[in-house]
Amino acid sequence: MDMSQTKTVVVDTVPESAVSTRNISKNYGEVEALRDLSLEFPRGQLISLLGPSGCGKTTLLKIIAGLLEPTSGEVEVNGKTVTGPGPDRAFVFQDFALLPWASVIRNVSFGLEMRGVAKSEREDIAARYIKEVGLGGFENAYPHELSGGMRQRVGLARALSVDAEVLLMDEPFSAVDEQTRRKFQEDLLGLVQNENKTFIFVTHSIEEAVYVSDQIAILLPRPSRVHEIIRPSGFREKGADNIRRDPEYLDIVDQIWASLRTYVE
Amino acid sequence: MTLFGYRLPGMSSLIIWGLLWEIVGQAGLTFFIPPLSEVVGTLIEVIQTAAFQKALYETAYAFIAGVFFAIVIGIPTGILMGKNRLLDELLLPWVNVFLSAPLTALVPVLMVLFGFGMKAIIITTTLFAIWIIILNSRAGVKQINRSLVEMAHSFGASPVDAFFKIYFWAALPEILGGVRIGIIRAVKGVIIGQLLISIVGFGALFELYSANFLMGHFWAVLIVLFALAFTISEFLAYLERRVSYYAAKR
Ligand SMILES: Nc1ncnc2c1ncn2[C@@H]1O[C@H](COP(=O)(O)OP(=O)(O)O)[C@@H](O)[C@H]1O
Ligand SMILES: [Mg+2]
Image (cartoon, rainbow over all chains, first blue to last red; front, top):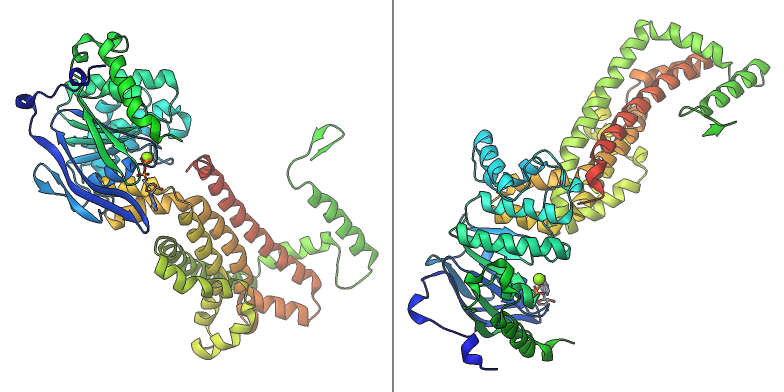
């Protein structure tokens, strides 16, 4: 397999970074979760962090979110150093993190509520995003009345409604069933096209990463570091239906598996 | 419970115990147990007396004030203990000691500190109720899903927002359970306070009736007290059921 074909780096079209991480290290006591990790996240793209579980993907994402402090190194969002969570970033949680005592519309407007947006205004905005993620009619339902896939749509609508430039998604589809996940992946491609946002997407699924990403950062564990960055280029325009049959898609999946297989117990 | 295929309404067993009471009373086995019918007659009589109404007022006042302080101090203390390791380590041993301590033995000390009036009775009531409220609120916060806290933080929630919009609601099922048990304990507290500190309220009535061997009156007041406590406790159990839909899925 010719590696240079799959790793097409077109230097003059790489846009300015929305997020940069510089020499991030993170220790949990004795455990060295991340060591000297530097990555650029170009604006308007979807970048996946892919790697076996325990390799520090969640840790890196939470450091970018400002939810965790790195032991050393720094994160910049739009050139400004991150010191904590901010309105320029929104998080989509692996376990949805919905308020079980609140209706869908209250959950979706929670981010806006924290930003002090008036009730009628935030509910208007929330209602719009509820429709956009395909949950129209469920505004007054409660999370326990929804399926896993629908709950994650609520989480997604909540993150979209605050209109942050950077969306941080921690294995958002890992807790939903296979069919729902495929639908989600297609919808995500649409979002990346239509919303002018930067997506940082954590996954442990090779196929998922290759399917949705503009760039894939492959992380290897103990301590976590960037092994390589893959930029699929050929099949992006071929449409959602054809990507999974594209030879380049299949090649990249194989190539990533070849890199990762030695790290899987 | 079902009997011969019929579903009996809740607490039908009380009818059996009531019948038994009536039989034992009619048999005149002991002056201590007059027939239930007589007690009920006395009850209706007693309720209309000024002495009873004064006692009810004094008791309700001490009880409501005591429970109020137990709730407004207990819930935030418990939530903060659940959130903050240091505070937890500092306070938890004391909460556990007081929860299981024979608080009645402390009442004389309270009398020395706070006098023989309403204040000491209210504080006694609070002391009976507060520990379980603290402990339950703390337990409610301890089991909170960490990612809810992170979610609130990531959307820029202030500590006050997090307290009222996340911690309080997440812990609400446990908090209500704690308040329900706390209130039952507060009934004990207020009566013990009234008996030991100054003879007022229902405590005074119990004292008066038992000293004069007015067992009908004694039981009548006890029934009123039981009914009040039971009603409040059932109301809180109802509130608990209202939030149970999310208690299992937090
Ligand atoms: N709070 C924590 N305390 C101690 N160790 C942790 C903590 N969180 C994560 N780790 C460790 O750090 C490493 C990376 O974890 P994580 O970022 O969750 O990986 P991933 O998301 O890729 O599965 C793992 O070895 C994990 O055990
Ligand atoms: Mg993870």
